[in-house]
Image 1 (tube, rainbow, N blue to C red):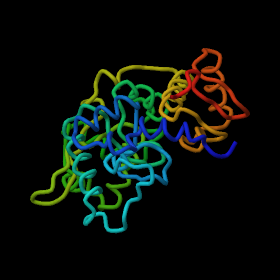
Image 2 (image 1 turned 60 degrees about the horizontal axis):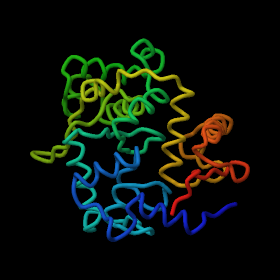
Image 3 (image 1 turned 90 degrees about the vertical axis):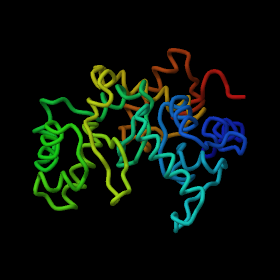
Image 4 (image 1 turned 135 degrees about the horizontal axis):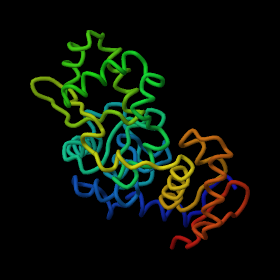
Length: 267
């Protein structure tokens, strides 16, 4: 099976807000979608094969970002909603899996942290020297603009950007606010400061992968061979084990090798 049945596409239309009547047009709408799905992308379009704020703002299945996003109403609206959602801090936002900017519901923070996060003891081993420098400054100041981080660390702009991206992937820092006046910059803070309860939860990796598989299948309605491994960068055996556990629970059905469907078929 290489293509999804139309009933699954229609299920995703509803879940991902790819219908005109379900279009996202407020911060509350964005938060409701993230909490319903568990996670979604930010400014990406139909080519990613995952739900996103931009696609939901468009309210259609074939949404494609234009080359000049500054002059596109839908892209501009999605960008504003993204910034406002970040500032409210009710859902998690950061560059996470494969460097994709993503929103997470609070219930999914421990899951992603168990898979991609690292403990304080592991920081010297897993983080680069520049990332550790930035993290040290943020632990002292708690929040700081990108330009101020450059001044405090003495690093060049590109090195600070790479360090912050690295810290986001490891769920150490998150943007707290986006400022445009007097100039554009992000205000950064510690993930553990903004989401202390969720970041304190400890979960075994295999349990976290299973819960991510559950969330992903609930979001998609059906997954094809290799979908989960491609999306999250897992080994095939790890994705397969998680999906087999969901089948054993009765949560899903295995239709063919690597093809899984929710037990309660979408209608």
